[in-house]
Amino acid sequence: MTISSSLAAGVAGLAANASRLATIADNIANSATYGYKRAVADFSSLVIESGEGTYSAGGVRVTTQRMIDQTGSLASTDNPTDIAVRGRGFLPVTTESSVLNSIGNYPLFLATTGSFRTDEDGFLRTPAGITLMGWPADADGSIPTFARDTGDGLEPVQINVNQFTSEPTTRIALGVNLPATETEFGSSGAALPLSVEYFDNLGTSQSINIEFTPTVPAVAGGASNTWTMTLTDSAAAGATIGEYTVVFDASRGSGGTITSVTPVSGGAYDPVTGDFEVNVAGGPIAINIGAVGAGDGLTQLSDSFAPTSISKDGSPVGNLISVEIDANGFIKANFDIGITRTIYQIPLIDLPNPNGLISYDNQIYATSADSGTMFLWDAADGPTGDIVSYALEESATDVAGELTQLIQTQRAYSSNAKVIQTVDEMLQETTNIKR
Image (cartoon, helix red, strand yellow):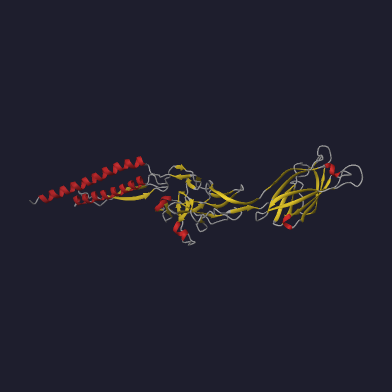
């Protein structure tokens, strides 16, 4: 009976608009929730085969969906580990419970933003317990190669606030002026000492002690312009690690520059770069004394012994003072000795259909058959955007638009209720025919 189908259509309309009202209520309630993705209700008609001269109302069917690919604007914060994805991609996260249980195989979820701070164990997590994940770096700060189609290599990011670090010295550059008068006949021939600090593999301060001994001519007239440079290592009980004969130019235009360096012991001297290598107790160190004819390392001028410049890499033991996350997803630890070391990399996860993800509490998502297979990209590489620190993604809810839809939904609900009321009155009239 067509009148009965009208009643069923009205009931279906009430149910559909009730579902739409629920999505609107959810969107408005989360208008201030960081990372929230708005839900929408889509209506589709149902058609029932009708006989000739009659029509049966099929009603309406509702499907709800969360628009995960729609992003909110970014809001700045004062926390360096508040991060948001600018553009396409998702952050890898896991749950606090899995981290506390130390199950090893952490479930992988996706998020677009999060206010991460260290907890009592140093894990970066949100107040709701969502824990950030990343690829751990090696001791030298490099990121190993991990599979990009699985999250098996990801680990919860843990910051050790009591962490120490140091960097061994691997290179020293010497700028020293040797007195030309010391290589003349009648000079004392006394060795001129110089001590250069370096840091060993454990961050301990050691020193390379250098003696410059002039070659004094045996007979009067002229100068030898030749020195013997002897290097010893304090970490090896003063053992000699290198000895070199250095000859300087005395000609016009190039006077005072290195002419040749001949090793007696130690690594070979490169006349183009000015480098030679010596082995201290902890390993090799490259020492630069200047190239032949350059005049920017060892020089022999005038009558004064003067170290003009000494530079080196490496550092002593330092304490971690802060952590920051750059646009490429590298988590870097800053130490009070002025060095920065990469400790994790946060990849960005991309999928063919973000709207096919399964939604969970606290604005996190899980992959499904509808979302497609995932791939882990370096941030700002491929189709993905970059990572913004000191920022959170605001809710994607447009309150004005939701209120407008609320008015439309209310009208539609009232109209469907009116249909039911009308059908009831018509059925009452049909009942009254018998009287």
